[in-house]
Length: 246
Length: 246
DNA sequence: ACCTGAACACCGTTCAAGT
DNA sequence: ACCTGAACACCGTTCAAGT
Image 1: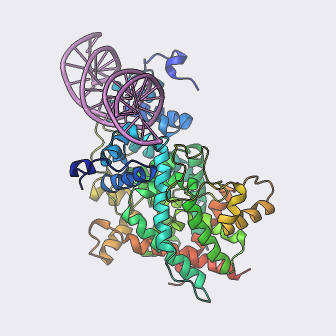
Image 2 (image 1 turned 90 degrees about the horizontal axis):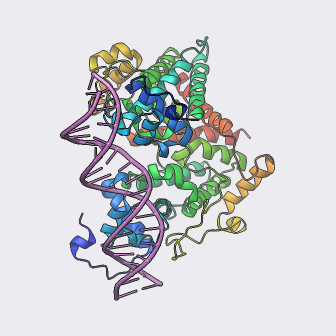
Image 3 (image 1 turned 135 degrees about the horizontal axis):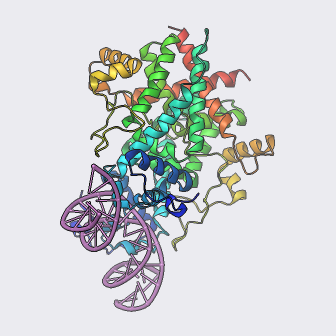
């Protein structure tokens, strides 16, 4: 809510890499990734931007550290989960782990964007994946199939899906194209809601039915949690079939 | 390779939104997304950065336009594909479309990052999805299942997977943590190659077997194309089962 | 109508200087 | 050992001014 400086908490406590990273998480949680500047993080700590460079090498170092912090938060949540029993216990266990990891990402909506390209650098992420591999191994998977499985799950293994297209978003976006040209060059003029049915008949048909089936979902909202679980179970069930066929 | 200015192609041709976008694609293709600055795009056109603002509203407008340009390139490739025949023709058709789309992304490695958050604004992307929906509808899918399917496919529907963790990347990254603190706070010290086996036994076991099975893949490289197709087929096969069970 | 020079606010980062 | 002021190079963007 308010910075330490504003609260009058003078910088008695010395800075540290750890305090810098925790401050960075707070800044990103409040203002998103684009608000995460060296100056803003320093302000959060009641210090100057230049002081951060004594504890982190550069901004990218903070981003790497952020991945590690969030992955550690995931590991904390995941390692207190109950152990799998027999049968398809592997699937329940993996499912539970992934869904708890997802809860962490729901608390830090900026995190997927950072994980997307920096997950490989974090030991905590490796630890998380090590747990997944162990669970699948215990469930009777070959290492080869586990390897394919991790690729197939992609970011879903970590608990987020990052979908580029949300069916139900109207085209054109928040603001109109702007500029004098008008024509988008490669594209037709921005279609309004009615015109869309003509240009994208199948899409319009699908959306109409979805809205009809669930009137609560005004303007084409989707249940993210249900869709995430649908996709997850589709993949896990497919993998289970392959596991048994060996 | 060289800018128009360097080549001596004086800015006789007036600027336009279209030329700006095509120049932006060239800049991103050559230098990646971080090299895409207003000044650099202008330079590519032999103009000044300020001149761009007569044809685009702001930089975000360029990014939206970029999505549309690449999506149009995908549509061009995809709409010349042969029509599906009977049986599970829907699957072959969808598969072909997605794999051709993927080829476009291989030519523009920066594009997934932009699509990730801006795909909804592009009419060309809508057009692409409209095609997918039509194909699945013809294949006997309900709109409801198509809707789930698009969420389950996620970015794979567009032809890219954007995996946050590539099994085989060593931890620690290109450069060491830096800074005086040493300890990463939440994480153990950076494990070297041998120590990794102790800290991440399952991961190490998996990687050892993969490297053993395919000695060509020195240092844990994976066949991206094969993994993409594995995940894609896993999902498409699962969907086909659900389609038949209705 | 189309383009630009000068200028502004804001970045990340360096470095010599403070305590 | 730890922090900072001043400064630099580089962003996106505005605006009055040129043709």
